[in-house]
Amino acid sequence: MPYKAYALNLKTSTALTPKMTDDKYYDTIAPAYDELHLEEQSKKLEIIKKELKIDKETKLLDVGCGSGISSQFDCDVTGIDPSEELIKIAEKRVPSAQFMVENAEALPFEDKSFDAVVSLTAIQNFSNIKKGVEEIKRVGKKQFALSFLKKSEKAEEIENLIKEIFPKAKRIEEEKDVIFIIN
Ligand SMILES: C[S@@+](CC[C@H](N)C(=O)[O-])C[C@H]1O[C@@H](n2cnc3c(N)ncnc32)[C@H](O)[C@@H]1O
Image (cartoon, rainbow, N blue to C red; front, top):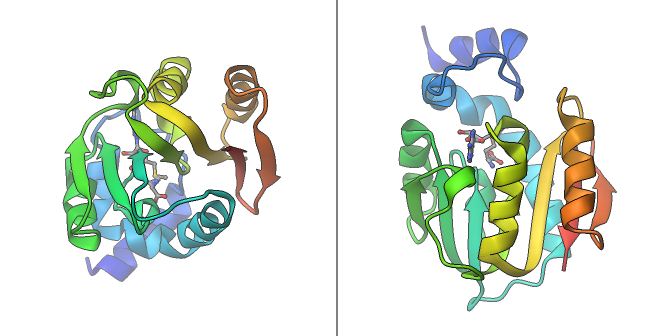
């Protein structure tokens, strides 16, 4: 099936809240991911870019970077995602960044390794949301931008958790996501 038809077929059945528990879900949809989500994810990225103070020296981690849409910052970027197929696309999209196949729940970095940590529309997919958000806090220093899908069945749980872990977070309601900014 051509990618466009494949993407449209997926659009009716999946969107960004997979019901599949299969770890390989995002590998399966990787060829169609950009077709499905490039436009909406790019809009969210622009909001985040306006809120964070990033310069060329900034060390930034993108947790759940997917195909690298959310890794497009003009600084020292590392992206992690459990989907090998999405990571391959990210490596082509942002050749200047480093990408690793890893999970949010066990980030392979020292405490306070990054000036900024972003996670765009990925938290609702973590298998252990509390552990993942705690890991994000552990490896970051001061700036964070975290978003999740408003329509996720875990949205309330995630929102309460972020408010607990980052009590000074600024809340922005975007069309599809709630975005929390800490800086
Ligand atoms: C909707 S996509 C968002 C991708 C990217 N941030 C973007 O803006 O396009 C959700 C991503 O979360 C990733 N993900 C799922 N479980 C994860 C985990 N435990 N740790 C980190 N990322 C995870 C998926 O592989 C997928 O790439």
